[in-house]
Length: 184
Image 1 (spheres, rainbow, N blue to C red):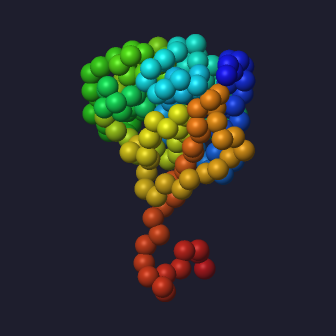
Image 2 (image 1 turned 45 degrees about the vertical axis):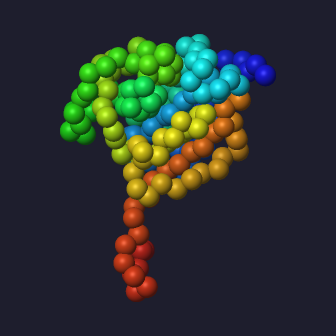
Image 3 (image 1 turned 135 degrees about the vertical axis):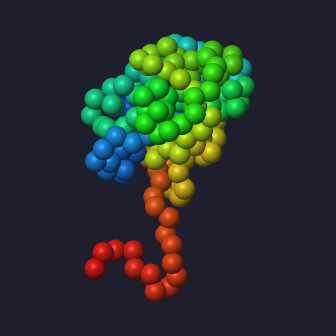
């Protein structure tokens, strides 16, 4: 089944809107995107990456950024050990060690490669602890989410043909039966 680029961009924007409405962030926080453009097209993950699909997804992300405050970061594929494409100033602010590689469609993934070309000063870091994430095509972003990740079911089950999952993080609940979690 084919999906128009406009439909894909709109679906991405919808997913972000639903996630941001739950998160209610008052300042920009990290939102990690894991994407299989192959899966969006209905193909097997890692087999048919497409920069034009990555472009449509990126357009949806940028449209959502006009309304919501988040810092997008992009997970590479396993050929780059799921490293993260991030703006250099953000990596430095987070005190992350920058690693040297440039993602390309067949070694990093089409989405990460495309995002790398669109950022002002892109770089890669090995890992982050993002505040929320959107996984398009079962790319397993969990390793890049803060504890405790809370799954979110939105109105969409897919972006194009790719399975969609989303999660946000919340602080750990500590203590025992006498612990209070709201201010008195």
